[in-house]
Length: 141
Picture 1 (spheres, rainbow, N blue to C red):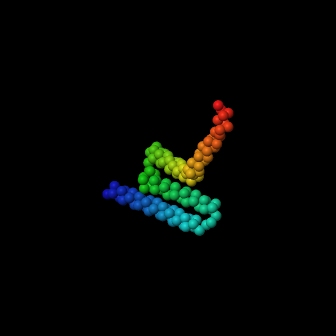
Picture 2 (picture 1 turned 90 degrees about the vertical axis):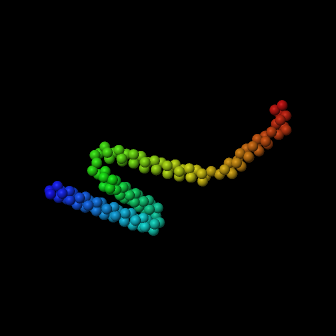
Picture 3 (picture 1 turned 60 degrees about the vertical axis):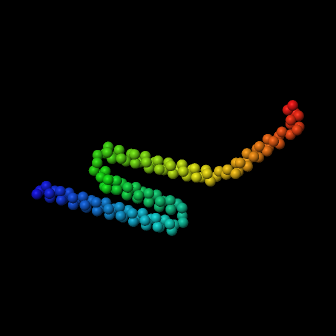
């Protein structure tokens, strides 16, 4: 009888913890949404950038709670946590690197004009043809 009471008490604590974390995630999400809608009305770029930074911090906090409680990492040993978190951080770094590289490629592509390059090479060829005048040919012979 005592064993089942202990299990029921532990289950009740688990339910309270899940409800608390769910409430925290809900509040963080509502704050993010409010900041996002407020940001759309603001004209100043500096303030918008600051709000975006706050939203990213709130998203990271939500990710911490989701991984910690719903993926049960909060109760694991430190080495187990690191084997999951470090590759996750590398994955986030890869995403950032690929986005930066893609943006760089897009910007370079927008500045490259193949028609302009083609025209400039034709001008160089024409200039070389002009250099070979009959006087130049006689001087070379």
